[in-house]
Image (cartoon, rainbow, N blue to C red; front, side, top):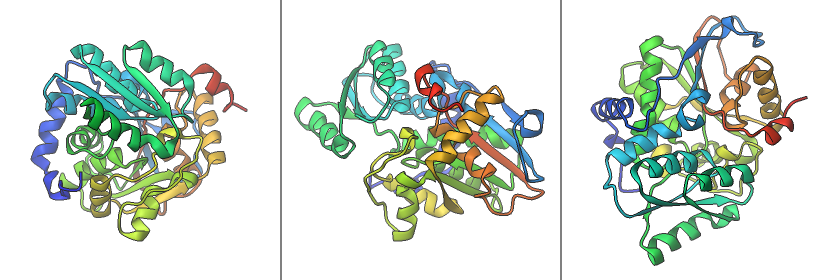
Length: 323
């Protein structure tokens, strides 16, 4: 992905991708955005927060947006392979079934087994391996089995597709002061930030949120280059072993900063949201957890957007998060 620079993601490309996603045969929906003040969620700051309910998206997460744009711009043949802790794999499997294509998902062995079973139920092969071996296995599939890699976050078409979420935000909150987004490999954060900044919202502050045990983008910002690390977090969807090259370039350009939350804060956020009637997976709570734990500076009196990025959490898994 190194050969694609941040300049490649233009406003025209984002608008085109948004239209592609909106009209996709995969049935991507314009998810609701609700005012925080109309929920029973706690808030100790006086500000106007809107919550984007991407946990209600088709396949249960934002990932289908990027997948819809990737499939629209690629030949519908061959055998695709990807790496995923669950959500991207589920969206890829959903798309593969729709288009009648063969695909394979290489998953970290730390991901919930229920997610592997779900992906397999859609007709896609799953191989579970240690986190550190993910790219080695994917590369083997590409080189030895002639599969085509669809990258789950370091891909221009995917990031442009995720930008559709940013466009939907601006349709309802035209000039947000602050937007808070989860960050794993950085694809969603890069897409949303690019869409908002390239649409002319120069003063909007955009923050990415990562788990302390999986802070690849945070470390990349410090070292001024994409880094890898041994990641560990209950938010497995935010714990890929490296930050994406293109997401890093875009985030460096358009994102104010990366803030960190710990696993205890993530666990509490899942429980708090559930008690208010919102089923959100650990990875999907990152932005919310950052806001309620005062990790985002200067929110007083501001128009804020908080993205709940996914709701794929099984009953057994959910039981472990509820106090």
